[in-house]
Length: 357
Ligand SMILES: NC(=O)c1ccc[n+]([C@@H]2O[C@H](COP(=O)([O-])OP(=O)(O)OC[C@H]3O[C@@H](n4cnc5c(N)ncnc54)[C@H](O)[C@@H]3O)[C@@H](O)[C@H]2O)c1
Ligand SMILES: [Zn+2]
Ligand SMILES: [Zn+2]
Image (cartoon, rainbow, N blue to C red; front, top):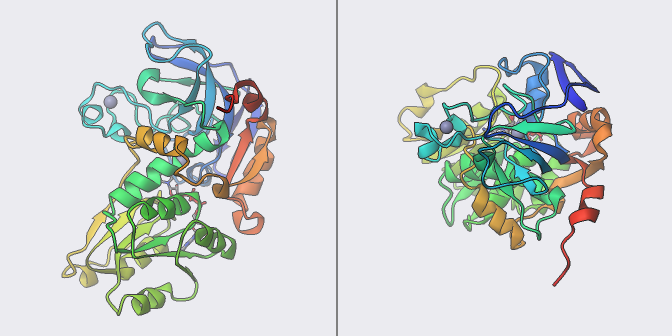
């Protein structure tokens, strides 16, 4: 089969690799119908994620069709259309028992496209299939459903819930890429008083406004001042970091009010400075997190009910074989306006599109 292989910092190739096979009775082999690229894939290619070693097939988000299920798989069978979550779960370890699947110690967690071969391929082996894929309701289109593989649960759990967004809050989202935009949508579910988006790219600030941001500011033009002006000098109740660079994290800690919360989502490859000399007396809470995906079933119900925005987040469509072109468009997002680039899907929708009631 063909797959997108990480060849070392700065290098990838869409090349022939062996087809995956069931290795464990809990595995499923899934034909990838729709796949996308994440900001985290770009971090891997930059060399920020050392556990992802050369030779790895990248990708941790997909919707596909089960083609083979190991003997122990109970909840899905060949032919089922499923969402492949970015997080796999053994279901048995302490962390899985507590719903913290991202921290799984039994061989799950974020493995796909990281420590085992991922979804940017024609087929993928998904471990612990019962707990790592979600059958998709007929009313959810595969190209929309893919937003639940990573960006919505991540933005919701690591941004909105860790940040403790409450009604009336002033919420600042730093970084208006797909994750930041999903955080803006997720924060909106809690009736915040005001959502302010900060980014360097005007196209992304425009997307933030279309997803519900009340105010936007360029990161290059002292956004701290805007936050100060809008909050009578206090700072924001919740600041969500959705970039993954030291400057962005440090900016978040300058924007938060005393007693407020900074929720870091970004994947960081370099140390950021924690200015405790300014923060120690401010009663600030800082959270970090890898997504657990415990919220995916709830988000899936919301998407099926039409209560999550999807089309504004999908800007480009490609065929699966256009992986390198899709990477090029995605990695030059400031020029191309790319948010989520989605590969594949047309043929699949023709096969399984549900009859309208
Ligand atoms: N914690 C998790 O579980 C998890 C899961 C998925 C993704 N992530 C991470 O979340 C982050 C966001 O993901 P994404 O897909 O939206 O990435 P992205 O690269 O598409 O978006 C980042 C945005 O930040 C903007 N930006 C860059 N420097 C900035 C600065 N100094 N100030 C303000 N904005 C700046 C960019 O213009 C861009 O719009 C990435 O670091 C990604 O790796 C984390
Ligand atoms: Zn991701
Ligand atoms: Zn586990």
